Image (cartoon, rainbow, N blue to C red; front, side, top):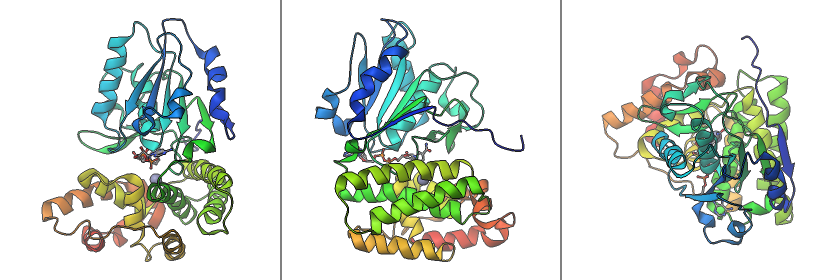
Length: 359
Ligand code: NAD
Ligand code: ZN
């Protein structure tokens, strides 16, 4: 297919307190008394007032997810097996309440309830055969764009790669900026910078087109307001960052990310470095590729007094460095977007090694 014909989230609700409309949203989607809604909830909310607001009926249940580690294919398969074991019928829906980690798990579990085998079999592009069960994304931290994307990024036995498919995209998203109120400063910054980096990589990439540019520019403008602007009320900042994340995700849907993502995937695969902080560690060293973006990024770091770790590749042996380099070089579309078709003349394994050694 020459032009991508990709799905968008068909329904979205936005506004402070919109979470309380969840009951109304879910009621018509309930298949039967026996078919529960399963809520995947970031365990940071265990026992919180938010948990009390989840509308539970009949056999509906909450599964707590610890997001200290990013989603794995084995974890997705285990949750799917548990749901199949515990309930007589397919659930009416899977609802993910949390950051990119929980939203990606919700997407993957919804897919794997209707597709046989292991989720590792579907890492790649358009390998999923059957429609997922109804699934809803409710972000509680802003930046990844996972709420709009047609992928769920999983670490499998052989690779860290998304399940990219038309069936992955959420059927419904609830954007309630109040849910992000309790995010700790460092994490707010790292995940928010994921969005900023999506914009820089999309807007400077060779895949850029008017579609991506229109979303990328808006997302970047919102990031600048949030991270560099004059102080606005917190509730306004939360709404703006939530919409920046949405637009940033839309921007990369029709283009690609670039050098920072290609390199941070390598770190994540070997060292388990999480997505937001990993992107920040890498991006901080990329002035050669993104001079303007890195200049602004450093201003944001200074303004918010956030620490970007250094020296994480110190002491790594040749084998480990080779693994990181190979994972990174495998991200061909990202390099091609960043540097054009001849990217391999610019980025050699030796060059990458030198860059990682500085991180
Ligand atoms: P996350 O979901 O891992 O959450 C980060 C931390 O913030 C966790 O400790 C979590 O408990 C905490 N947290 C979340 N909401 C909170 C709240 N309201 N109050 C207090 N603490 C809160 O972080 P993330 O950066 O949103 O997501 C990273 C994941 O997203 C990675 O697995 C990455 O691969 C994935 N990702 C997916 C896509 C996609 O398109 N599918 C895009 C980018 C990243
Ligand atoms: Zn990202």
